[in-house]
Length: 198
Image (cartoon, rainbow, N blue to C red):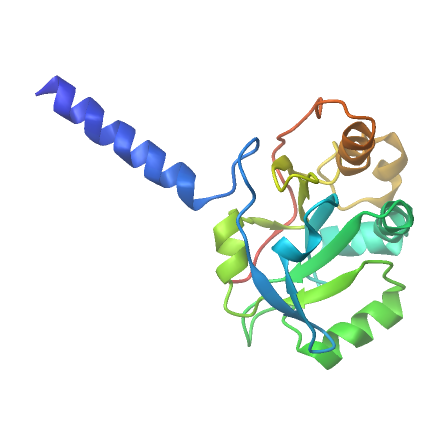
């Protein structure tokens, strides 16, 4: 009896972990359309480091990082080093922060985004596949397609721009370590921000 219960619990744990993205495992594949109507698949970027940034321009925690230019600086630094940076909006129609392509382009123009593309995930399929909980919620995928980092952009969970210089920038650190051929020293952290508005 006890053995069968344990087997059932183990099966649940395995099936549960297969649903959400797991550090050290292949990142879930996806195909999404960007703000200009172009289709992007994760498989297209095999051989490159990829950053996924869940975003909602109306969230105070996202405003913190864009208002201080921290997100744009990280995007610019990453893309200059051949890293693909994909901003993803999983906000459902009618929910806070939802945008269509034109709306996304307006947000990027106003905030000076330096990402590779802004992807629309209005039905939340990709966000749920990754277990994206907050905006921002950050993922770094290495050149082999393995999820190398999952969590917060930095180490101070606040909406205060003044905290940015004092914080450890987890995403930048992970990218640097991957580039140097080292294991990511902090591979998983608790994301903070507004809940993703599925």
